Image (cartoon, rainbow, N blue to C red; front, side, top):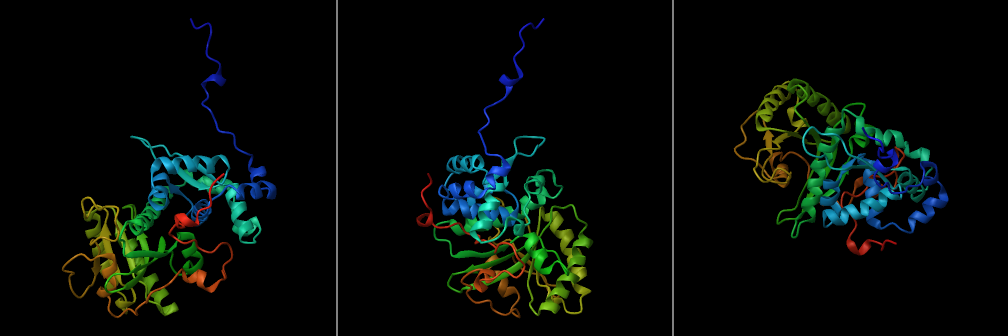
Length: 349
């Protein structure tokens, strides 16, 4: 018989003290917090506002030199309520920590850009609510595609640069009345023959019927006709077997268009190259041409040569939305996909 049970309070682990949500959104608290943050911290807050959720692995490969260094800083940002975190349940193993923007982070971004907090359309319960969303895995997978591109830019001797990365929500604001891509990207290659490629991403997890995916091409053709801009569509699928099925459906849909050249399409699968699953720039992309079969897979930077009729994009210096200095849709401008240089980081306190 148990006569001296352990008190419930003794079973609790140590919980780092955090200010309340109301306190974290006050001007005084945000002013004090601003003195402790580095430029990299601010960049991370903007990335979480734009892309909703990032895992520890994605944050590390984009902006930190090691997991240990990232975890130490992320713990501080969590304690200050710049960011919040959760860990999804998985049947086997342990899921990585997932991070979202918290109340102090949203208030800081609003004040830095001279906006009211309500102008950001931010609510903490909605931000952390993605933990229970059926779209969590899809959002994390899409963000992982682009975080791998950012990591590729950080490698020594890298010749490419991810210039623009728009989230699904931002794409919906711009194009949602016609089509809703999972993301938009712009890549600039600085090699011997400089090229630039912009694209819409369709990130497929194998849960959508291939014919339904193919029907989206009509919407992309309508968008190209409406805007006068032809933008390639890159389709990322989980397996080579799935890719074959999707390509058949896309080819059928492309043949039904009045002008198939309005929707350049290329596909790739996550398991195509052993050891390079996380490198979207590798020679893994197969353009879809209903007139002839592609002989080989292409690098991301080589895709513009597969569609010679596309106008050259040149050498974009920065995000087009930032170049105008305005944001007609309200809210924050899209952040730079690349983190600030180490020399730009303020020392933390």
